[in-house]
Structures are given as C-alpha cells and as structure tokens.
Length: 159
Image (cartoon, rainbow, N blue to C red; front, side, top):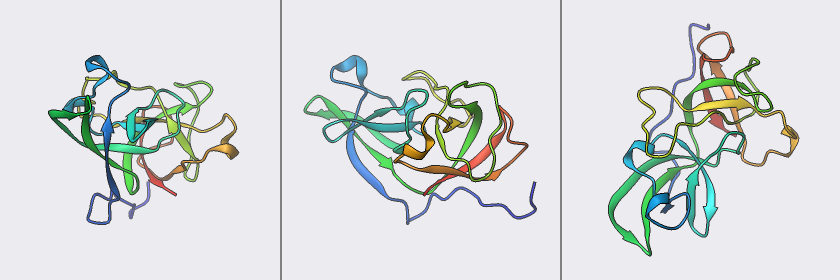
C-alpha cells in the first residue's frame, strides 16, 4: 500500500441533486435513512432507486427526507461525483470471486437489502466485465487499501 493515497471527497465540490427516492411507487418501495450511503440508479421520472448487483452506479444516496412525501415519494439528495470507499466483491459475472486492480471500472456488487443499514461497512463493487466498454456511468478504482481481493477496501471515483 502506498504511503500517500487518495481519500474520500465529501466537500463543497460535491454534485448533489434533489430527486424522488424510491425503488418504485407505493409505501413498500420507499427508501429509509438506513439506505443512505448505498449506490443508486435512475429508476423513473425524476427518481432514483437502489442499484442491484451488476447495475451501473449513477450516484450515492447522500440524504433522505423521511417527512411528508411529494406525490407519494420521499425526496432526497443523490451525490453524483467524488470519491467513495467501497468493499471489493470480485467480478461482475461471478460476484465473490476474482480480483480488482487500480484503474478497473466497477459496477454495483452484492447489495444490502432496502431498509437495512450498511452497518459500518462500505457498499460493494464488482469489476465491470460484461460489456465493460459499454458502461456509461463510469466509476473506477483509484486506490487499494489491500490486495484487490474480495473483501478488501478500495476507493473509487466518478470519471
């Protein structure tokens, strides 16, 4: 591990957009404060929902207003840039196996269920292997805090 390494960026340069936050319509699809810090993707008109394994990462849920809803949806903030600490989860085609290197592009790895907190862990990522050249929302590994094996911690940034 290098003596100097990039760190997370959570500062005034963060690009945070306000959006409807839910996996779908209805009360059972609404996200909760426990989902803050998880990866999200565009899920509908002006709406972001949680990523599933293998989904491109479009942002990180930064905040959530669990108060009154707007048109049946909660509002929240989605951070669309910066750097994020993650746990490595192997290859997109075979989560749980394989290694990831600095410079590899990543997609969402094994996810924690909606409404369940990450519990001090970091969201998981897999190396983008399925048509990696077609990935539009590019996040890549810029620092490894270990070997690049499954379960190790790394830092990704939006390209």
